[in-house]
Length: 443
Image 1 (tube, helix red, strand yellow):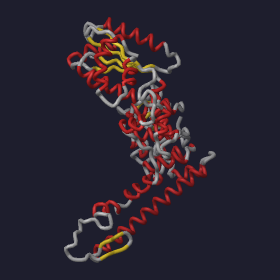
Image 2: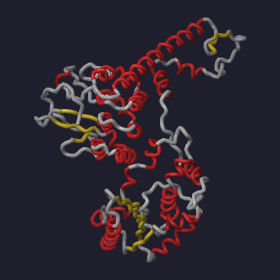
Image 3: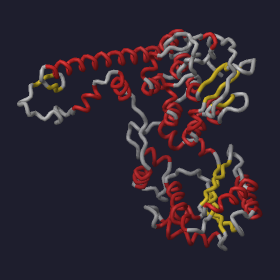
Image 4: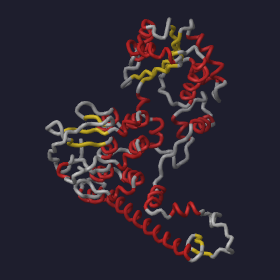
């Protein structure tokens, strides 16, 4: 599962994993497994909802059971498997440092004793295994200096691409060459500009673009903006490699993220009969540069949409639930950010029927936001209620679990079913509630 490289020789130092490392043999993360199996939609959803897994290293030990054979992040693995750009965006959003991360070479400098992945950036993987040109550009934008980093064989990403054989190799090589030349040219330009600024300062002149001017008088306000550029910006602009990085990143278009209200308002204006957001409406409200399958897949094709979901609001009859919890769930529902067959169970000690709960909630939901009444009614039709004698009532939770089992069984094509328990109750009953849920109601 890792790129081919010179085999590692043994070392006498046993590997001791840290908290953010997992052994491939005993169980990699769900994100890593999804990437390994090229389950891209699931990988995107997992990266967004469990971002810590994007920063969790996965390693495999050698035959001696002590030395590391290879060690990578999910981004490394993805770059070796011809990923869609949306996966790379999701992994970098979850763990931005992944683009500049690699398993370090031994501190003694003996590369022969390192793992076969030591010193390899995700960019090296992309260059060796034929990732798309867009993926290479994303990696360069995330870590421009990566094109000057050598792996454990002493090779640059550009060198690796030239030695590899895959259909789009020439395009990848060209992209890497252009990136390197642009980076070097930008550094030279900034150095020259910095030098001109220094000369201008020494001669008592000020720079405006490519020209110089002499201040009109000695009281010239040096802090004032000159030609639209202030001193702070000039200082940032002449910061060498850092400015070159910023310049290169500006050349790569990244997907934009809209706020909930902005997306909701634009969707509501499309004239949907129910007023609820739909995938097709989402496409219609996007500008031309946004309306691409990659962006829509990120927002509407995440892995959790393929799974069932039951939300259980413990303390459903209380103020917190009706004023905050249920309105928040309605917002998610109205914005099409819950699975289509989601249902919401309320659990509390009050003697209520399903209709009683819905009647209590409706006034608060109607005034909680700009929601059509038809959407509120549709949402409430998915809300149910279960009474318990206490928040640790094992029998009541067991009965609730049987009802959830029956509902989940009605969707045999779902690859998994999730249960989310929200505790809208006082902290002093958290423990008994958690014990009851664990004993009776886990998915």
